[in-house]
Image (cartoon, rainbow, N blue to C red; front, side, top):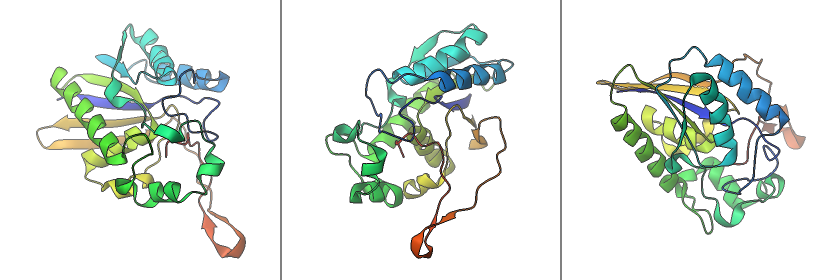
Length: 225
């Protein structure tokens, strides 16, 4: 079976600020366009068979940057679209971070359903089903298929294919314009790369908050965590 390159879209003005979800019109900003162009150059020598994208603008724009250098046409795959956050879409991450629901997403995501939206487990099921369909469409071992999607979507897929419980998927990090590579064969899936964004930053130490509680260093979260 094929090798999948799972790519998170490049950055936009909502990253780290608001929960974009399926909100229309959220496009790459200037930095995001630079990221997408750099990503396309990094992948220029990878012989991609096909490239698929979430239907959301920020993903399609990232996919198109890659496709131009590959001579490919972007194919839309709704199954790898963002989590359907329902009533929470558009909310600020600062306000959401104080809610009990948001805490549950971090520590018990398998038990969370978004109001008016889908559950995290339902999201994982549709994404895995969509990727498994791609493996049937591209059965040859030498095929390399790129899929441009979203942070939580990629984390949920990786968790499934490596046997990580869904309640631990928040321990994975997927940065904007990063590439995660999973190859599939007779012995099952193998994770070759995780969150490869072409750089090797020095990890920051957890910041110590008042009362001695440690906090994780900030990252480029989109709010789909």
